[in-house]
Length: 410
Image (cartoon, rainbow, N blue to C red; front, side):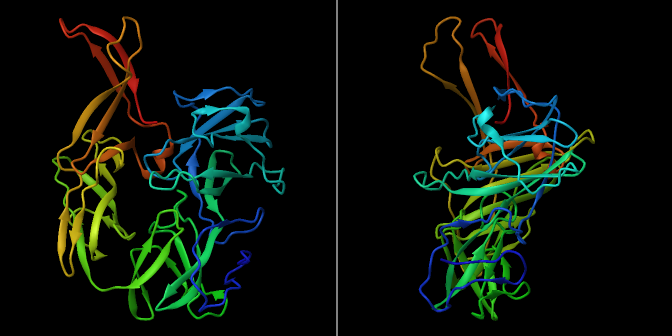
């Protein structure tokens, strides 16, 4: 078994380079250890409980604050977190790990025992499953996530603790490697996620020459390699680059778009991020589909910006593939002509007085489903500031309004 000491950099690993390649299968975490790669994201706590959240727990304290996160795919159900203030120095943290939208007694997380009780700073560790539509559901991927309450008691930070260990083969030689989650979504193949490779085989990981980020291409020893990986990180393969081209976004809009980005995935596991409209991003040759698109628009009235996140919906249809050849430049418009429709849950005809479930869906021309809309900066996605829609049920004759309801993002 591999052994990694996370107390200091450089890291040490007792693997013999040149051995057979070993997959990155297990997530290693030592409770209480100091993780030099632990990257924390700040969450602004809110006094208002999300409208669709139920509470069956009897809280000990008199004040609660809430926040929500997505852990895994951007279209996954959000995890509700409740912080109960028992006293100035005592707090209870509840995490809806099952994504049930209900806070129950079983959601209480035991605090780390080594916290300093003289301050408001607290730390909790909880196991969370990574929601991934493409993963093998018979073998769920679980990470250990740390939540840290700031000394002011207003800000909650969180990050994925621990790392994956394995080996990667480069030019026929196996090298020890470590992967971790740098942006707190449970995946390890995003452009900010650290990747350590023991290139010189000395059993150490040098922070200057052997630390990379999980981009689509890496430069090692003067040569360029294509990185093939799945999102949860169980597979990692580096192959010498045989050809590359350029991909750029060509989103057409009459509104003032201030920012946009897209994440593309190839058939053989290459992930490419494209930032900005009409700006080239280098990518290895292959066939790509758009996984995620984010767009930010200025508010016509000068208020907070409007932000939209779309992601692929494998249940709807086969994805659209875009082929990139060597030295070729292609432009992709993942938005195109949007497709909006309303689906009805249940079997018709309905009886008078029977509730009717409606679900609104907005797709881009590339088949991406909207899963988030929010106002403000990226850090505001965790506030309860998602716009809501009012749905009116209108009679077929006369146009009388039969009922009305509010709709938002889960």
